[in-house]
Length: 174
Image 1 (cartoon, helix red, strand yellow):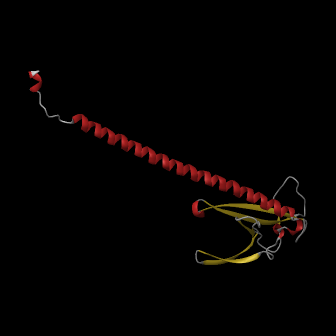
Image 2: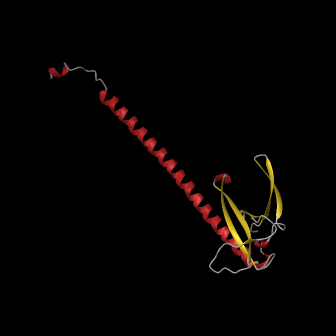
């Protein structure tokens, strides 16, 4: 028992200091992993929102084309250059006009703009197809449909669709 009294009564605290350093290191690693997983969740949510918006947009374009096709001779796809509305556009401090018409569906929040691509008074020859018929002309139009998505609708996604509408003769017709 006398030998025990000779041992130093002060402890140095090395084990306590080592344990505290290990706790700090493990806490730092845990915080880094949690912030990394939060960023991964945000990226996944953004990709999912874009995918949903893209699918809605494709459905809207298909619905728009089907609606116009069901209108027959009254379809806006038959509008010539003169019948389309002229819009003054200012882009890069240069003004020019374009033949456009808003053909958005009534029950939709998405905007669809049709642009007539014919450069001149007459319609263009139709693109080649397997069932080519001589004398059939085409009215070339382009439809741009846009959706806004994300928090506060700060992102936009646009699909541009080219349409060659066959016409029985020069002018209107199916």
